[in-house]
Length: 85
Image (cartoon, rainbow, N blue to C red; front, side):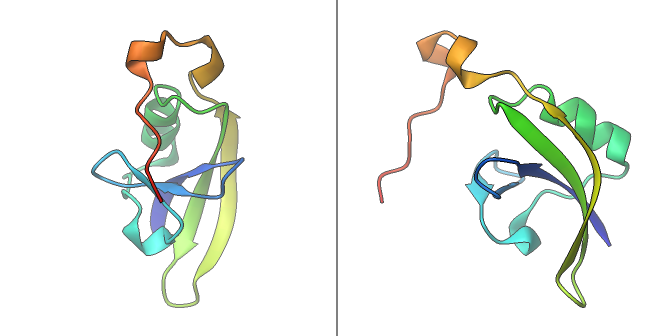
């Protein structure tokens, strides 16, 4: 079982590289929900969920939620450019 940070709006998971990915198996694993929440509050996302991912069944269980550093209130230099698709 893995504890992950999920962007509430995009349903993407924070990776170890600091990027966002739709695949929960690519998400950065945190040791506790408290560590995950602390890290999520520093991310430039409006809302987040802390989820427990069970890889064997690909099940997600919500553990907590909150607000990150809202990207609309950050200076432009601190916001990563959008990926080109």
